[in-house]
Each structure stands twice: as structure tokens, then as C-alpha cells.
Image (spheres, rainbow, N blue to C red):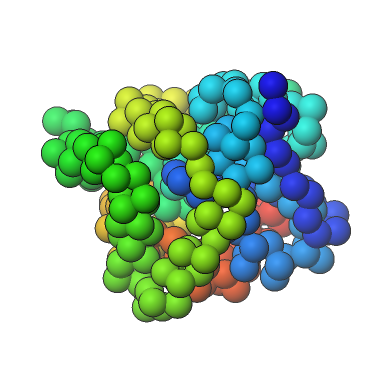
Length: 259
């Protein structure tokens, strides 16, 4: 089995674990990491089937990935999960070995698809149409997803150029793993686990996010004992690209709070 790729960047005293979203890889965090090299030592994960972990045969499941990371990243780190990566960060929060000191959930949600008691999410019909599009033309579906990630952002065109440049920079993600990721997004529901988590948690939302409604993140923050909600007015789903300085600033504050 090829090993899960974890890249170490920076030289700061605090440890930061970063987990990317669907169809991407850890390289997408470069604009954020570069501005925090003196603050954090970053452990940048490529999820199974993605980027430098393309040949890793681990299942794309939070429990399996967290088990593999126990010997690869330090205990007591700050964890940042973007989009689908938020599910892995939340799973780490329940792992006694990893024991994150704090969580930053960036454009993430405890449940991605709508339910009768969960209107603040993507409508199921729209999600299923995307699954069908992926099966028909995987490159076109990924391109459409990238456009949705920046739609509405103040710097949408520049951010989209960045996403398109980076998405295949470490090779194409495995198509089967993309379907596996959509399955994970469709069936995951972590709403009931949020009140059990004790770490400080910062839910960072883009007001113009078209994939994860800010209302979902606001609800999630309120469901946690130490949850906090922060909204970037001019940002969309991939807002950390064009708003890297602002995101870095709040991460420093969160790390100081949890020290």
C-alpha cells in the first residue's frame, strides 16, 4: 500500500494539520501556508486517491485516515478542514491519540445534503445531478465544481485561475475516489456529535458560499460548547485563496486562544 502523503511546511512553534476538500489536494493551501510559515509547522495531508496519495489504498473514510495519521502528525495540533476536509477534522477531534487542541472548520458543514430537518444544505436533487454529471464526464464535472467554489467571491476570476492551475498539479485524482468522496458527503451527518466535542472550534464561512450555506456553519458553531462563528462578507466557498491574510490572522488568534 502506498503511504498517505503528509508534507511538512514552515518552521513555527505551533503544529497545524490541513485537510483539503473534494477533488483537490494539499497544494491548494499554499497561499495560506506561505503567509504563516513563521507561525506554524504545517502538516499538509493529501487524502487517499488525491494528489501525492493517489496510489494510497486506504479507504476515503475519516476513521481510516485518522488512524493512519496518528504516527504522522503531532498530538495537540490545530486542525483545519476545508469543505469535505471538515469531516476529517471533526473525526480527529474524537480521536484520543490525535487529540487536536482546536479546530478550524472552513466552509465545512456537519451535513452536506438537505434533509427534512436540515434545510440549510445543498438540495438533494442538485447533489444527485452532480453525481450523474461526474459519471458522464468527470473532467467537466470537476470544472463545474471549481466554478461553483468561487462563484460570488469578490476575487472570483483570480481564484478560479488558481484552482484550475492547482487541481491537477499533482496528477488527476482517481475517478473512483471522486465518487467515494461524493458518497461520503451524501451520507455523513455529524450534527449529533458536535455537542460532545470539547475543543475550541472556529467555523469560518464565506457569506457568498454557493455550496455550504453560512447558516449551516452558524448552526454548527452554536451546537458546540466552545464553537464560534465567523463570516467573511466578500468570500465564497474557496475564500481562503483570495482572503488568505484574513484567514491566517484568525488562525493565529485561535491558536493563541487554545494554547
